Image 1 (cartoon, helix red, strand yellow):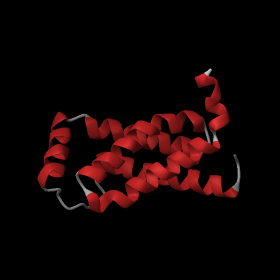
Image 2 (cartoon, rainbow, N blue to C red; image 1 turned 90 degrees about the vertical axis):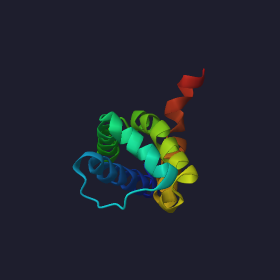
Image 3 (cartoon, rainbow, N blue to C red; image 1 turned 135 degrees about the vertical axis):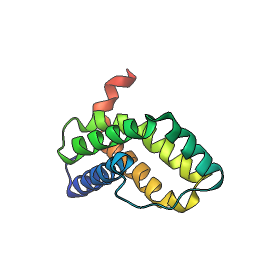
Length: 124
């Protein structure tokens, strides 16, 4: 569970979450406006006024937990629905961003697999 590979995956995933999570409310990474269905979907989420900041805060918290190796199994479970939604959004609405989405899902899956012993009591 604490191999060098696992540490690298955990830290990289944590850093990705911190950067992209913080960007949801600080807007330091310039992005081209989305068009079509992806743009409409993101505009409707943005119009709520709370979705992006809340998801951003969750991503930053989860990223910090992963980087500092605190409550990793809990952080990974919190990240699972977020990562699946990121993947589905890019798969169906914004194919060019699929690479980072796949990275997040694959890294999350690897880390859940590596921590599977901690999840076993949930299934008994």
